[in-house]
Image 1 (cartoon, rainbow, N blue to C red):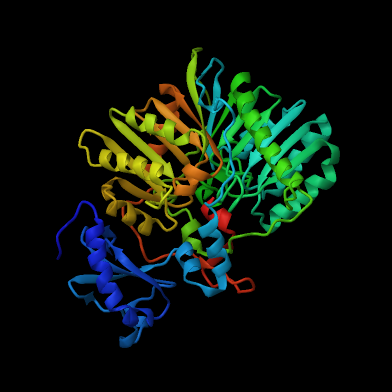
Image 2 (cartoon, rainbow, N blue to C red; image 1 turned 180 degrees about the vertical axis):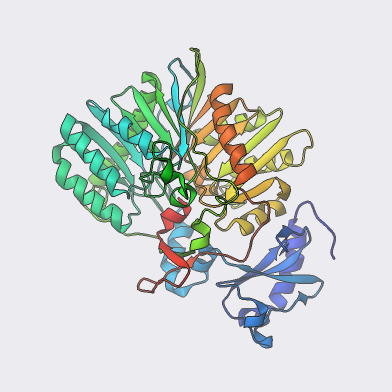
Length: 536
């Protein structure tokens, strides 16, 4: 057993890497080999804080399924060797077939052209006097969103990453046609096949009512890898904001509250999401201004000769589909803890003015999040689809924010709890532990798509921004920080119920999604999912 470490420092990494380099020819011929790197190993579901050699493979197999010469050595030099399944990004990096995708990912953060609005109005603070509709998914997603949309009288401005639910498209078209609503729609450029069909339907059915634009992302565009907002502004006066897309999993067509039978297995049918509806004309107008600004950016790109920026064109999907184990999507907690769907709540219950701070990436998210984390006196609860550590050049603001939270995670007087989605969780938590996080603050949970924080039970972030370099520094995402104990308490109760009844303290490292071939049959026990459905 080596020396237990708080942080895997660069000097130790270099020492381990030298051993990897000296033995690389022995490692690279192993079945399903992808890469090898220094890191903390995971043993029996727990991170061991000692330097080791991690061998990443496309598919992890039991030792009994391998010939003796196909097994990794137990130790090389002074370091133990541990095998881990490679996440889909590592699989892409190690696949000649996907070299163009890997190159596009590597180049996506270069030459970005986004410019903030003059005066950075997203930095304003708002005092909201009308109650807000707090709700979560899969308990009450589409049953709340649908009447919000249907109540539109004249205008609707929407920024959306993923719009693949045909029943939402049908209701959307009916509403627009019935009320002669004028729609501005800005939409991420990486389209799945269902989205392509919905785009065609919108273009055909709505014609003069729809001002629709694709926001292109990547090298020499405004945003790095995703136009990732989920915001809809109605009649200039109110808006819906969420962690969840207009997708089958983010807004499943179920009503667990109105139809209790549909509550059975609801966590298998839909993701955990946090949503909110706010009625406040100045704040709604602000988000509408930014949606219009993003639309205008696409118009300028078209005028400059760019293609695939209107709904008339079909952008190419950049990322491959994945094969995902069915067990990753299944609700494994129902037998012990039957679902008790959380009802929407109009809060606060007593009239008062509430301080609200809008956040937008890349404009002011890091600034506001640092203020939120710095304000914590007792507790910080986070629930994220994923937290991907990065210390790459250009990601310094994100790395520094993570370092701040890592320090808090070891303080005895600070109650830090972090739930992350189970997808690739072992590798991501391991990397965070190497960077100084207390791994004991983490739990994993299936079907997590949320991106929310509750601080001291008094302030809550509802947002769409995943925690990665692109997610907080270079993509477009939106959120709200709401300063109110009653509203924060609503989301905190949902978080704690997840923590107690659905999250897992053991770090599982033997199940992983893998890249699906274009025409490859779905293996037994797995389902095919688009990249954006899996990672959101």
